[in-house]
Length: 182
Image (tube, rainbow, N blue to C red):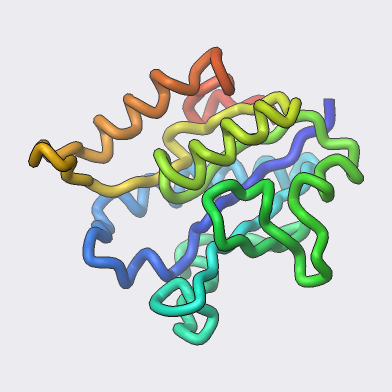
């Protein structure tokens, strides 16, 4: 089964958001880097996705829509998106990520990136519904604390646990990065 590693939104834009917390960044980058290195050693495509918006820190004009400086990546292909699911992301020539995967015979995707409960989770659900086998590398995703409308503060660990609960064995196989079979 042909596999691709998808690296979603690991971009400098997040470093300029008010909720950004760099505390979890070094271990996250370390686990993600290990997956990228393993994939590249095995000739597995590494697909990088950036999120872009018209204005703000996610706009191309901001200068922050580029890889976080701590990550070393030489992607097989690069995509940009303006919605949550990376499957809608497009190359500079207009090919969607989903089309690229199908054109290259990819049947299995490994999802990594930022944010755990947003673009990574949405991409996982979409890919599963589109017929791909999905592995969700939980600790190779990153998120930030959130506060619900009721005032409850959710830690990144609680958000990750919730994501694992709703995805595992429904939409994906949820594993730690070191357990990802490449």
